[in-house]
Picture 1 (spheres, rainbow, N blue to C red):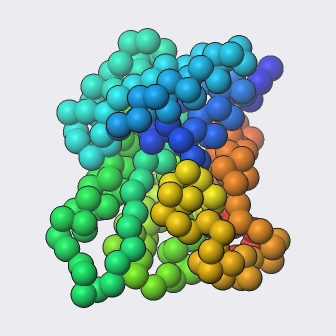
Picture 2: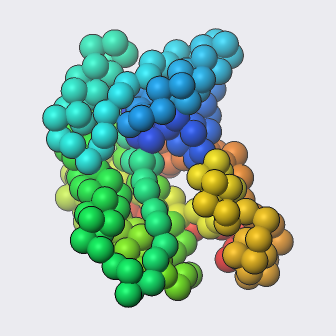
Length: 248
């Protein structure tokens, strides 16, 4: 039997990049997956199509994790169409780098609303569906919580918050059979990283120079770790911050 047979997963921000690869990997192990997206319906549909073409089950559910009404709606849709959730991957995130002289409240709120508030809202919705059987929550954080990048103070602050939230929720929810862990990737070359100009330039080379395994990461380097944390293989693992970064 596949590791996640009969399970239902919600993956936020899963229309591309790490989220898309995690959604596909969970489906390959038997989970029915709700592929959440905020704006890219085309990307989410492509992920669903790839999963169903491989014999899996998936649906696309629209909604911003930064809006409570959206989160409640897409979790309700996932439950109606797939069943109560067993696995939540809090992957949705945004970032932008800027000097302190260019700090703005709007950018601060944009990143914190998605990266931090979104974790709270999605976690609350998932916990309401887990019930007595428990579940697994996987928060996608970042190595910026230990590898400090100039001009990334807002983003780094959001991910430091995610690490703290992970450990607190692990303590709080453990008695209810809910495991909470975080994956902290290093530089992963995704569509967003390429669009931001970080791939192939000095920034990527500096990261590779500090990475013992000598390369940037790929989404498929992260997805198997998410499968592990979602599965019964990790039944004794909670409150952990797993750095998946090639040793950076």
